[in-house]
Length: 469
Image 1 (cartoon, rainbow, N blue to C red):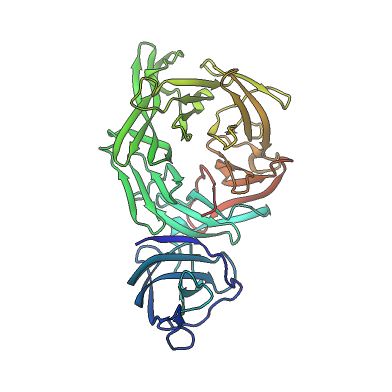
Image 2: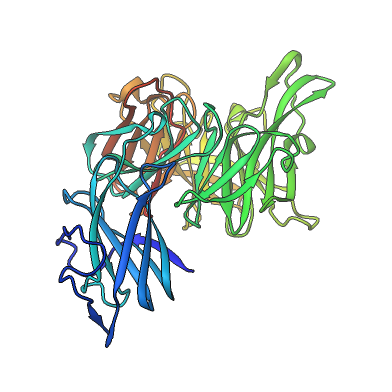
């Protein structure tokens, strides 16, 4: 059975069905479609463990594909749909991306005739659990990103949430670990699944809440995984940390694991390539403090070291002599690491960055990252032109959080530098849970928002991730 969840396109999206009848179409008689009659029955039930998901059982005779669309009865939010294109009598459709405590109207049609209802009905969603009660308050402007994914800042569970920016409401949530732990890292994948790490394992779910993958502590060699997880072409990349003892002292160093499903494909450890030079005679120091892992289409990995204000590019041809070799290091002037790329700036002022987060390569090949800056300077997104032949990296653009923002625009830890579907830079100021969207030409803030919790205590948000799911 092939299911697809999408934003509905075509048809009269301004007409909201209001019938509560789920057995036939609005005429109470079977609707003729493509020369056949298709009496139908539809039953939608809230999933027992999630207030924002409905499971709709559909029966059609004769067997036929079906399309179910749904929308809020107050006219707010997006119209969405699920399609099952198999010719069977019984269909099960998962209805997702729903706001809490809202009435919805649904319409069943044939996929190739969305304007002719076969059945209509309504349902009402339930309340959010405490750990998912995120409120997104718009501070200025309008976002071009339909949705924002994030780990919840509300304490009480390791939960990922997705917020619809047009309504500022949570429309999806899922606990990704047992117990009241904090979700250390969350990623929203190219397969429209959600990955989360909680310190010793990795879990992946689809939008219906079904477990897709669980990489267990045993699979991970009982390493402490932390900060970030990433998916590319079926491979899962996750950061880990371990203590090492060297003649100069004790250190906490980082690496990353590469898995295909539960099977480990590769393991890369910083200590196999670089030896810290600073003495550490006492307690182990967090020398590298890795905070991001990302892979390009060729499999080369960007490995971000906050503790050294450095980004490493690592050859991803695993299983070959070149696999795992450091291709280049981009290090700030005050890093202990030597930079292979000469750092320059087209913007004037110093050519540097400090304690960066979320480096990745944009489709045009430029490197972008969140430059936290030393306090009290305002943090920023920077875009760099990297020339691997000339061995240079040049800062071309900067998008700086305004100085009148909370904390003077300085974001001391975490943060992100994603792009919206329209290509606008989106920065996360993690400690104060704020997001800033910038005009790519003027570098002016065009939208800003703050995430809060409705009841209970609140913590930071590592990254706001723009989504067009």
